Image 1: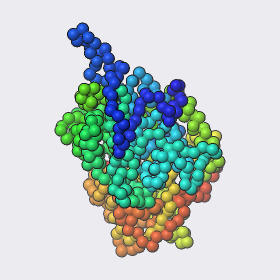
Image 2 (image 1 turned 90 degrees about the vertical axis):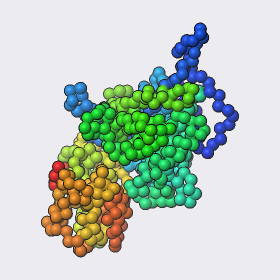
Image 3 (image 1 turned 60 degrees about the horizontal axis):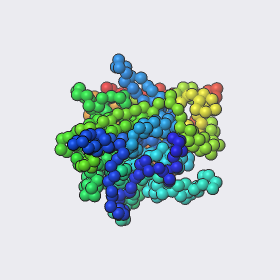
Image 4 (image 1 turned 60 degrees about the vertical axis):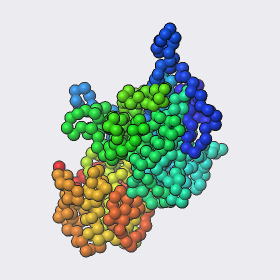
Length: 605
């Protein structure tokens, strides 16, 4: 079989996944000695089979439907050079990811590919327009074996997630290609800590077991317990999300009882390494080195029965060891996002104990570089779906004079965030549209940069519908609500306190709102209340203000409980429609939009 033709349904027995959850094993498992495990030792004149074999674990996370190479700074990784300087390396795109993974597997008799969630959701138009069917098809061809669910797998609710797993055409939009029915994912989505409120049972398989020649490795998949705080209420309706540590430990025990001693946890939660360079030595002993964030405490609490953790969610790159509860080091990895990196981990499997030799575990992140050959089956897949998307995707919406950074910005205030907030304010300021006087945009809802260079045949500076969609792919409806001045101030303080204290979420604000963010302080004090002004006037705690925001924020998402307290709600058009209307009204080919100055928040460091 060629490297570019992987018909999953009839996959060669190179790697076989057996769904372990709730399924009885028929017949006894005969542990055949692996072919590459013989003739490695001699004793008493006889060949002795080797005691261990190496299993290659390839992993990645947070693809978010980025089939084409991500544009601008969102499509680069930072690489530390020998002389200490850091360079940006273009990376990503499934044509290159497929090639990287296929090349990495060569020469490995035992290779399994796993993912840490958010394979879909918040996707560019090429995938998002078709409810991410193109991405599932690509992952099938790449031979992904298993993934955890991430929070974005719930963007369209549990019923749509079940369709992505099991197949079938979209209930509203039907089948996209004549005579073709969507087949669903050939790999299991694991959701061990997501249960139905009605039944109390996991909505998808909690775990699965990969088997080959008697080698067995269990995979348990969980998403972050806080998923309901970062997904719209409709997306998690009827679902309950449980503690990551308790859930993984519960199923690790269950797998252990079944004789599965080698276990990998796929956890859609992550951390932040001290350096953004993908090749940073996370285990270097210097002050301030290492990793911080939620995954550290999770890793320290997960049973020693689990041999490695593949993580995600924070879009960071790291290969770290964090001690398990018994004090032994254990590998914790993440491969950034958008298919720009993959992690190659060697798991040395002891054929007698059926466990991983933890001291032998080796791992490294590798760049999915764009100077390698493209996988031709992925090129064909992208071209096929692009043809279907083109009539919508290629339509010009406006013009810009230079890159306007969003996802790729390194400052709390994003130039693209200002632009989006201004568009929302303008669209919802008229009395009959809501009468908004200020607008807020959540930073996590900005998924890309607006890039000046042409991505296709549209010409430099042209913003197409596809590019605008990639920036804001959720199509959230806009809301305008009444909030008191006290609630407004509380919302700004919630950016840097409560659930957002460890990892601040700085709201993007419309023109006219200004304040000082003092990062030398802690908690809510980092927002200097006395500096908050709207159109030059101090916020009056008792006054009522009409505030525009997307429905996610209006529901109190991202830890902004104060924004969820709004009353007198008016529902407006979608955030994408408002954004495109603003681009059309404020730019032409001869008078393009310039990047905003991003000077509304004064940052003290």
